[in-house]
Length: 289
Length: 274
Image 1 (cartoon, one colour):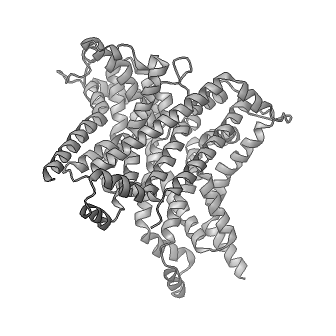
Image 2: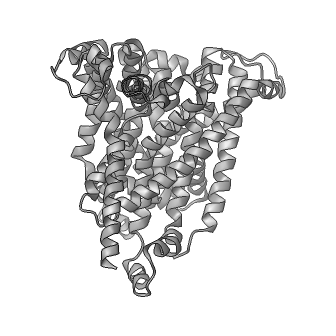
Image 3: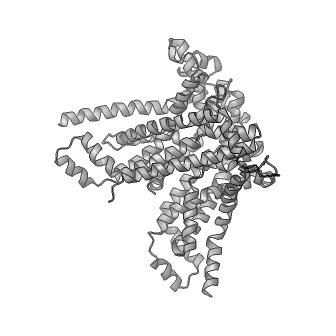
């Protein structure tokens, strides 16, 4: 009787979303692992091939180049996004009268999807800056930044920072305003300078915000696709392909479903490990209140 | 001391101003150039248009099928977000009120699934669902969004429901309300703030999503980000039209944001602390 009622409640409240979740996420995830050990061509599998797909993936020099490029991108964008976002949060939580307007300005790029942002900046780098450079003779921008691997990397970083710092700013604002006013007043009475208050009181007390912002930027960095496609398209000569785009090209443009999927599994493992390490380390700095 | 503080304030103001300028500058470029003719853009992208031309907008509106994409985007976003709210609030209610091992494990799996990048699924995903997609691609896309979004939404609701005392459910049940009635008439209305958060976070994600629609949708059903991307790819040489297209793509979400600004910021910070 009780059991039947519990089952009825489960079927009313939980069944449909869990079935959809299983179909959309769990099954493809398990399937994806399975496929990497077979000769799957996107349609059917005929035999097991062991670790062949993984061996092939790691023998692919462009995959290594992509992994290097992605790691560099994740590290650099993670550092700059968080430094900038924290700075923005300090500005908009100061006592400036214009702080609400500023917050809107900083946040707006975040509302717009990566693809639209990417093409806006493609225009900026390819056309606007080049036209201005020719007019005013600025050597730095005469050639489009997107034609050069090294500069295209920085273009990707600039757009990523511009896009995601507004979101992380909100995360840091949440952390900053959660600090009790009495603690700050006490430190002021004790004569602590603003910088000292920031370093020894505010930052330790809002460590949780750092855990979250770092996690989100880490994950976002590894998964970045939209800006990459729309800004550089992986060019020049596939030298600015982040791992997402690389997998997409491998599977859907070149039809290598086996290696594409094993690269995707490698990506999943890297993201999971990196996130786990980051969260474990960050958690250690969180003050229990 | 106060002089030092005033100086500090001045510096913050100047730095903030410069940064704000840098953040809106690309939008400014898009805006002024959308109103200009091609030679004027190449001569000086910074100049304010001397003679305003609306032709760019007319061209962009038809070439990127603006209203069709806008309608698609609205349908897909509204349906997906509403269904996500319904399903995940109910699931979260069930998981937080039923203290069994089963619900504990389900919750753990949902949380763990949030770390899986979509890229790790997309290849088997597309192979498996090709038929479903070709049958009704908008329906399939909405179905996929529910599957991908349910974990985070349930997680957010779960945190909120845990703070609603169970006495309320008990009172409702004593008064003879069924589970469903108690949930929809009493619990759900109490969750307005978190419903706002869940809706905004999901709406932003789905409205702007590109990779999944790119894999799933066809020409007739493409959403705004997709048609903007394709349009820009084809007409990037026609700078004025391309800029007009970008401006059109940006306007709806900015209006939406300005109308709901307070809820947006509150929603994102509520989502962030979890």
